[in-house]
Amino acid sequence: MELYHYLSASSTGAIAEIGLNGVPIVQDLTLKGVRSDVPVNGWLIPGEKNELTMRLRWLKEMPFTPAKVRAKARVVTVVAGGTPAKPEGVLGSIAWPEATVVETADSYPVERAVPLEVRDFPPCHLWRDAARLQTLSAGDRKEILALTEALRTRTLARDAAGVVELQKYKIEDLARAEYHDPGEMLGIARQQLAWMLAPDGNELVSEPLTLETATYDIVAHGRVVLVRRQGVYPAVQVRKGEREFGYAVFCAKISDTWRVVR
Image (cartoon, rainbow, N blue to C red; front, side, top):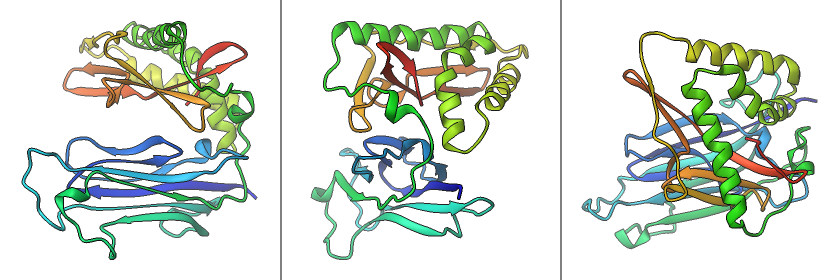
């Protein structure tokens, strides 16, 4: 049976990071509030303790207001044709505030984690292929940065085929995790990027990522490196006229080569 897993999450009133296995998947960095249903088949790791995690931060410069923050998250299982709103089962959930906690300013930051009872794991290759990491060397950081910058510069060059090639492992493996044909999904990705990067009179503008502005977090039980800009923002950020888009960059070392994998 083809099973699909979703992270259903919402938050308001706080800086929020909600995700799986240390990977932030749903975020609110602006206090505007967020609500999202995100497929997470590609983040469930066989043979490991899978966890749903939530981190909420209250900005110190803001006066504390009790009951202002509301957040909830759950990971659900859906059969083909179903929706996260009507799941087959709930693997784990977190909600804030909690009935047993008296909320004060000292309650923050809130950090919670609950185990997920996963029985059927999606058929992806990453967790078999990726080396387990404990630390990153200076050479690793430079190689990861070079890969991330290659993504950025090919985007600025409107090289859709080149951007897809750098993300080939990611696209193919997420296709497997979602029960799609990897080759077909590569073709779709090329078409979508060609449309997104097509000349339209707007210049593509992006600031380089550097060793000083890049941060590297080892997540997913040591298999993946999350690359961010100043610890918060997407590693690759591009402005196109009044619109802005970016890439979350997750790398892994596979057969001694760093690749974009998620």
